[in-house]
Length: 260
Image 1 (cartoon, one colour):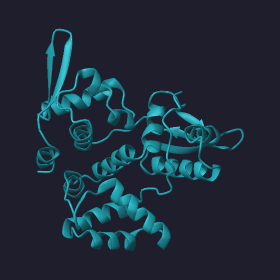
Image 2 (cartoon, helix red, strand yellow):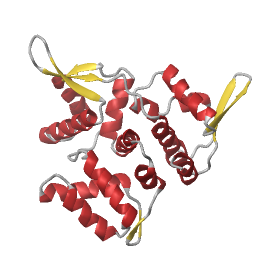
Image 3 (cartoon, one colour):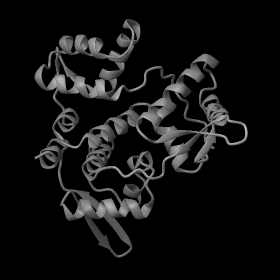
Protein backbone atom coordinates (compact mmCIF):
# COMPACT_ATOMS: atom_id res chain seq x y z
CA UNK A 1 0.00 0.00 0.00
CA UNK A 2 1.25 3.49 -0.82
CA UNK A 3 1.39 5.62 2.31
CA UNK A 4 3.16 8.60 0.76
CA UNK A 5 0.01 10.72 0.49
CA UNK A 6 -0.59 11.96 4.02
CA UNK A 7 -4.05 12.76 5.33
CA UNK A 8 -4.79 16.13 6.88
CA UNK A 9 -6.95 16.16 10.02
CA UNK A 10 -10.68 16.49 9.44
CA UNK A 11 -13.14 17.21 12.23
CA UNK A 12 -16.30 18.25 10.38
CA UNK A 13 -18.68 15.85 8.67
CA UNK A 14 -21.23 16.84 6.01
CA UNK A 15 -24.74 17.44 7.37
CA UNK A 16 -26.56 16.71 4.12
CA UNK A 17 -29.95 18.35 4.65
CA UNK A 18 -28.52 21.49 6.19
CA UNK A 19 -25.89 21.81 3.46
CA UNK A 20 -28.55 21.56 0.76
CA UNK A 21 -30.59 24.14 2.67
CA UNK A 22 -27.66 26.58 2.69
CA UNK A 23 -27.08 26.09 -1.02
CA UNK A 24 -30.77 26.82 -1.64
CA UNK A 25 -30.40 30.03 0.39
CA UNK A 26 -27.65 31.22 -1.96
CA UNK A 27 -30.11 31.11 -4.83
CA UNK A 28 -31.87 34.07 -3.16
CA UNK A 29 -29.00 35.87 -1.40
CA UNK A 30 -25.43 36.01 -2.74
CA UNK A 31 -24.03 38.28 -0.03
CA UNK A 32 -21.11 36.52 1.63
CA UNK A 33 -21.86 37.77 5.14
CA UNK A 34 -25.55 36.87 4.89
CA UNK A 35 -24.65 33.35 3.84
CA UNK A 36 -22.11 33.00 6.64
CA UNK A 37 -24.75 33.94 9.20
CA UNK A 38 -27.30 31.63 7.64
CA UNK A 39 -24.90 28.68 7.66
CA UNK A 40 -24.12 29.24 11.32
CA UNK A 41 -27.83 29.47 12.18
CA UNK A 42 -28.96 26.20 10.55
CA UNK A 43 -26.08 23.83 11.32
CA UNK A 44 -27.00 21.08 13.83
CA UNK A 45 -23.96 21.78 16.04
CA UNK A 46 -22.99 23.96 18.95
CA UNK A 47 -21.75 27.48 18.30
CA UNK A 48 -18.05 26.60 18.06
CA UNK A 49 -18.64 23.62 15.75
CA UNK A 50 -21.02 25.66 13.57
CA UNK A 51 -18.30 28.27 13.03
CA UNK A 52 -15.86 25.54 12.01
CA UNK A 53 -18.35 23.96 9.64
CA UNK A 54 -19.10 27.35 8.08
CA UNK A 55 -15.44 27.52 7.05
CA UNK A 56 -15.64 23.99 5.65
CA UNK A 57 -18.85 24.82 3.79
CA UNK A 58 -17.13 27.72 2.03
CA UNK A 59 -14.04 25.60 1.37
CA UNK A 60 -16.05 22.78 -0.16
CA UNK A 61 -18.76 24.48 -2.17
CA UNK A 62 -18.25 28.24 -2.48
CA UNK A 63 -16.34 30.62 -4.74
CA UNK A 64 -16.39 34.33 -3.96
CA UNK A 65 -15.78 37.61 -5.74
CA UNK A 66 -15.42 40.52 -3.35
CA UNK A 67 -18.36 40.43 -0.95
CA UNK A 68 -20.47 38.27 -3.24
CA UNK A 69 -20.77 34.55 -3.76
CA UNK A 70 -20.46 33.41 -7.35
CA UNK A 71 -23.46 31.36 -8.46
CA UNK A 72 -21.31 28.63 -9.93
CA UNK A 73 -22.50 25.73 -12.11
CA UNK A 74 -22.06 23.52 -9.03
CA UNK A 75 -24.57 25.58 -7.01
CA UNK A 76 -26.93 25.90 -9.97
CA UNK A 77 -26.85 22.15 -10.58
CA UNK A 78 -27.56 21.27 -6.94
CA UNK A 79 -30.40 23.77 -6.70
CA UNK A 80 -32.08 23.06 -10.02
CA UNK A 81 -31.74 19.32 -10.53
CA UNK A 82 -34.99 17.70 -9.42
CA UNK A 83 -33.61 14.36 -8.30
CA UNK A 84 -32.70 14.43 -4.60
CA UNK A 85 -30.30 11.51 -5.00
CA UNK A 86 -28.40 13.45 -7.67
CA UNK A 87 -27.93 16.33 -5.25
CA UNK A 88 -26.52 14.01 -2.58
CA UNK A 89 -24.20 12.28 -5.04
CA UNK A 90 -22.69 15.57 -6.14
CA UNK A 91 -22.17 16.63 -2.51
CA UNK A 92 -20.39 13.33 -1.94
CA UNK A 93 -18.19 13.72 -5.02
CA UNK A 94 -17.16 17.26 -4.09
CA UNK A 95 -16.34 16.11 -0.56
CA UNK A 96 -14.08 13.40 -2.00
CA UNK A 97 -12.27 15.92 -4.20
CA UNK A 98 -11.80 18.48 -1.42
CA UNK A 99 -10.60 16.08 1.29
CA UNK A 100 -7.89 13.54 0.44
CA UNK A 101 -8.71 11.58 3.59
CA UNK A 102 -12.20 10.88 2.20
CA UNK A 103 -11.39 10.44 -1.48
CA UNK A 104 -8.23 8.39 -1.02
CA UNK A 105 -9.88 6.15 1.56
CA UNK A 106 -12.59 5.24 -0.96
CA UNK A 107 -9.98 4.76 -3.70
CA UNK A 108 -8.05 2.41 -1.41
CA UNK A 109 -11.20 0.31 -1.11
CA UNK A 110 -11.84 0.48 -4.85
CA UNK A 111 -8.29 -0.64 -5.68
CA UNK A 112 -8.36 -3.52 -3.20
CA UNK A 113 -5.80 -1.98 -0.88
CA UNK A 114 -8.43 -2.17 1.84
CA UNK A 115 -10.66 -5.21 2.22
CA UNK A 116 -14.29 -4.62 1.33
CA UNK A 117 -15.20 -5.84 4.82
CA UNK A 118 -12.83 -4.52 7.43
CA UNK A 119 -12.68 -4.27 11.20
CA UNK A 120 -12.83 -0.89 12.86
CA UNK A 121 -9.41 -1.64 14.34
CA UNK A 122 -7.79 -2.31 10.93
CA UNK A 123 -9.40 0.72 9.31
CA UNK A 124 -8.17 2.91 12.16
CA UNK A 125 -4.68 1.51 11.64
CA UNK A 126 -4.91 2.57 7.97
CA UNK A 127 -5.56 6.13 9.15
CA UNK A 128 -2.61 5.94 11.55
CA UNK A 129 -0.36 5.00 8.64
CA UNK A 130 -1.74 7.87 6.57
CA UNK A 131 -1.27 10.38 9.42
CA UNK A 132 2.18 9.49 10.82
CA UNK A 133 2.82 12.91 12.36
CA UNK A 134 -0.62 13.47 13.89
CA UNK A 135 -1.64 13.02 17.50
CA UNK A 136 -3.65 9.89 18.24
CA UNK A 137 -6.68 12.00 19.14
CA UNK A 138 -6.52 13.72 15.74
CA UNK A 139 -6.19 10.39 13.94
CA UNK A 140 -9.19 8.96 15.78
CA UNK A 141 -11.27 12.07 15.13
CA UNK A 142 -10.46 12.04 11.41
CA UNK A 143 -11.17 8.31 11.23
CA UNK A 144 -14.58 8.74 12.88
CA UNK A 145 -15.51 11.73 10.73
CA UNK A 146 -14.56 9.97 7.48
CA UNK A 147 -16.39 6.78 8.46
CA UNK A 148 -19.51 8.80 9.31
CA UNK A 149 -19.31 10.68 5.99
CA UNK A 150 -19.05 7.39 4.09
CA UNK A 151 -21.92 5.89 6.08
CA UNK A 152 -24.13 8.95 5.54
CA UNK A 153 -23.55 8.75 1.79
CA UNK A 154 -24.15 4.99 1.67
CA UNK A 155 -20.58 3.98 0.82
CA UNK A 156 -19.97 2.00 4.02
CA UNK A 157 -22.30 0.38 6.49
CA UNK A 158 -21.62 -1.09 9.89
CA UNK A 159 -21.87 -4.83 10.59
CA UNK A 160 -21.17 -6.82 13.76
CA UNK A 161 -18.65 -9.61 13.93
CA UNK A 162 -20.63 -12.80 14.57
CA UNK A 163 -17.98 -14.16 16.94
CA UNK A 164 -16.63 -11.19 18.87
CA UNK A 165 -19.37 -8.58 18.19
CA UNK A 166 -16.56 -6.17 17.30
CA UNK A 167 -17.54 -3.34 14.98
CA UNK A 168 -16.82 -3.92 11.30
CA UNK A 169 -17.53 -2.01 8.12
CA UNK A 170 -18.65 -3.37 4.78
CA UNK A 171 -18.34 -1.65 1.44
CA UNK A 172 -21.47 -1.06 -0.61
CA UNK A 173 -20.66 -2.40 -4.07
CA UNK A 174 -24.22 -1.75 -5.26
CA UNK A 175 -23.92 2.00 -5.73
CA UNK A 176 -25.71 3.16 -8.86
CA UNK A 177 -25.40 6.94 -9.23
CA UNK A 178 -27.94 8.75 -11.33
CA UNK A 179 -26.95 9.44 -14.92
CA UNK A 180 -27.28 13.20 -14.39
CA UNK A 181 -25.04 13.23 -11.32
CA UNK A 182 -22.36 11.10 -12.92
CA UNK A 183 -22.14 13.19 -16.09
CA UNK A 184 -21.84 16.35 -14.00
CA UNK A 185 -19.09 14.84 -11.83
CA UNK A 186 -17.22 13.53 -14.87
CA UNK A 187 -17.34 16.97 -16.49
CA UNK A 188 -16.29 18.57 -13.20
CA UNK A 189 -13.25 16.31 -13.00
CA UNK A 190 -12.09 16.68 -16.60
CA UNK A 191 -13.20 20.20 -17.52
CA UNK A 192 -12.68 22.01 -14.19
CA UNK A 193 -10.03 20.03 -12.29
CA UNK A 194 -7.96 18.46 -15.10
CA UNK A 195 -8.81 20.90 -17.92
CA UNK A 196 -8.77 18.00 -20.37
CA UNK A 197 -11.41 18.09 -23.09
CA UNK A 198 -10.12 15.09 -25.07
CA UNK A 199 -8.82 12.36 -22.74
CA UNK A 200 -7.55 9.03 -24.02
CA UNK A 201 -9.84 6.11 -23.25
CA UNK A 202 -7.48 4.71 -20.62
CA UNK A 203 -7.32 8.08 -18.87
CA UNK A 204 -11.10 8.48 -18.84
CA UNK A 205 -11.72 4.95 -17.59
CA UNK A 206 -9.28 5.62 -14.75
CA UNK A 207 -11.14 8.73 -13.58
CA UNK A 208 -11.39 9.31 -9.86
CA UNK A 209 -15.15 9.71 -10.04
CA UNK A 210 -15.57 6.08 -11.09
CA UNK A 211 -13.49 4.98 -8.11
CA UNK A 212 -15.48 7.16 -5.72
CA UNK A 213 -18.65 5.39 -6.87
CA UNK A 214 -16.95 1.96 -6.82
CA UNK A 215 -17.75 1.24 -10.45
CA UNK A 216 -16.58 -1.75 -12.48
CA UNK A 217 -15.51 -1.32 -16.10
CA UNK A 218 -18.72 -2.88 -17.51
CA UNK A 219 -20.76 -0.47 -15.39
CA UNK A 220 -18.59 2.47 -16.46
CA UNK A 221 -19.15 1.53 -20.10
CA UNK A 222 -22.90 1.41 -19.51
CA UNK A 223 -22.89 4.98 -18.21
CA UNK A 224 -20.58 6.15 -20.99
CA UNK A 225 -22.97 4.69 -23.56
CA UNK A 226 -25.80 6.75 -22.05
CA UNK A 227 -23.62 9.88 -22.18
CA UNK A 228 -22.78 9.22 -25.83
CA UNK A 229 -26.40 8.49 -26.71
CA UNK A 230 -27.44 11.77 -25.05
CA UNK A 231 -24.67 13.74 -26.77
CA UNK A 232 -22.61 14.66 -23.69
CA UNK A 233 -19.43 13.00 -24.96
CA UNK A 234 -18.15 11.48 -28.19
CA UNK A 235 -15.78 8.56 -28.77
CA UNK A 236 -13.26 8.46 -31.61
CA UNK A 237 -11.48 5.22 -32.47
CA UNK A 238 -8.50 5.31 -34.83
CA UNK A 239 -6.80 1.97 -35.15
CA UNK A 240 -5.73 0.91 -31.68
CA UNK A 241 -6.26 4.39 -30.27
CA UNK A 242 -9.47 5.43 -28.58
CA UNK A 243 -10.17 8.97 -27.42
CA UNK A 244 -13.16 10.69 -25.88
CA UNK A 245 -14.24 14.26 -26.40
CA UNK A 246 -16.47 16.29 -24.12
CA UNK A 247 -19.09 18.03 -26.23
CA UNK A 248 -19.60 21.06 -23.99
CA UNK A 249 -16.74 23.47 -23.41
CA UNK A 250 -17.81 24.53 -19.93
CA UNK A 251 -19.71 23.39 -16.88
CA UNK A 252 -22.12 26.28 -17.47
CA UNK A 253 -23.14 24.81 -20.82
CA UNK A 254 -23.43 21.32 -19.36
CA UNK A 255 -25.65 22.39 -16.50
CA UNK A 256 -27.97 24.25 -18.87
CA UNK A 257 -28.39 20.96 -20.75
CA UNK A 258 -28.79 18.74 -17.68
CA UNK A 259 -31.27 20.82 -15.66
CA UNK A 260 -33.40 22.14 -18.52
